[in-house]
Image 1 (cartoon, rainbow, N blue to C red):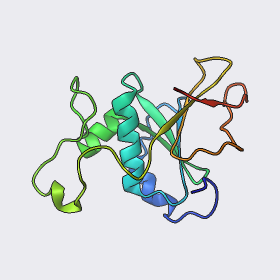
Image 2 (image 1 turned 90 degrees about the vertical axis):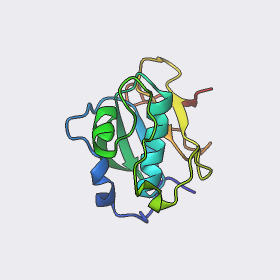
Image 3 (image 1 turned 120 degrees about the horizontal axis):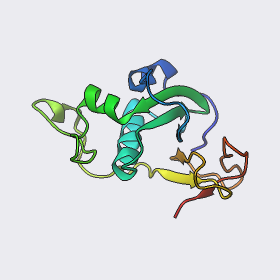
Image 4 (image 1 turned 60 degrees about the vertical axis):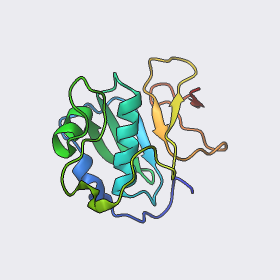
Length: 148
């Protein structure tokens, strides 16, 4: 699965995730062009569950910027998580209609990249790894490395 290329899902599909008041200077989640809205939401929820201090993240699909989203916006919109209880999905009547199984996705793993020159520079998240084309730091243009 490559990151660039033709989009399988129209960009406006992801507009529901955009919080127009969210910070735009934080880390970026880059998704493959064939990513679905469910893929994007699962990846963002996974990042927020793991990165407990992160409040906002920029989104890009197939190399094209979508905008930013925030923890509080997704909590309000989708009922994800409760204040102080981590970032978990709450369920109600009818939520099982989508036939989504609980647990981690078996379709992808979110990868975290860090700047090798300054850990304070924004991280980048991807679901696709390409040894020949590592992400570049937005602050200093250094090739970023996978976080361990």
